[in-house]
Length: 272
Figure 1 (cartoon, helix red, strand yellow):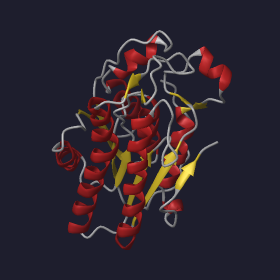
Figure 2 (cartoon, one colour; figure 1 turned 135 degrees about the vertical axis):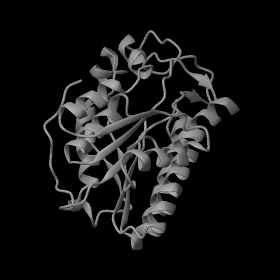
Figure 3 (cartoon, rainbow, N blue to C red; figure 1 turned 180 degrees about the horizontal axis):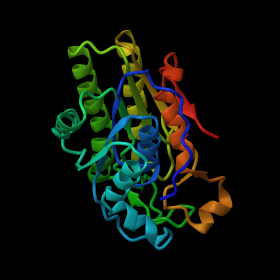
Figure 4 (tube, rainbow, N blue to C red; figure 1 turned 180 degrees about the vertical axis):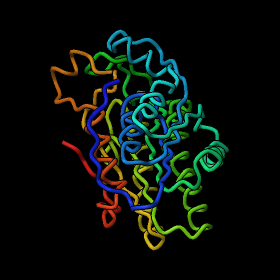
């Protein structure tokens, strides 16, 4: 993995922060874990080995990375002088949220940064086509495609924010950062309709958190990345879109987790 130069936005002097970053064994999550570690933040990385159905329109390396652990990310962070710990966790299980915070507190101490990056992505549609405009496989909307998406992007996000807030308030915390990742959103996402709907729910939870938790020093923002190379980008996609690197998205997330962003909350930041 390529390591980008650190943008040190400046954390509170004398304080050690701890982050939970979900889905951080590859892509934007991995880049975010490294960016936060370079700011001196301890990072609990969550991941779930997952083998998507083969798709000839998608590079094989993507499937390999989705089915990998997080050892490489931890090794990179450690080599740079940071602290990281990885946990394989299924966010579709309701009890996972509390277990992750228990583990983070056991290893590092209280969590004051939460990055909701993991997704239960499936590509479904109301149409009858078998492939989308990029040649990727489509499936019809079913209860299974709904459950896979909403269990992670919507329900797990809500439960993680709830656990974060409960523990933060109980210990009298006065500094916290929540950043969630979205795509599609309230205006719909053709060919990825359950994904877009679940992300719309995620955005709403994040905005509510920003309003309710502001008095406890917690900011809550959402980042809407552009098309980003997390391993799935084919030559066809690259020829049609301006493609960002995962590290560029991580830089925005790292800024939102810094003291420089202490008055930035309840925003959906759409990257170009």
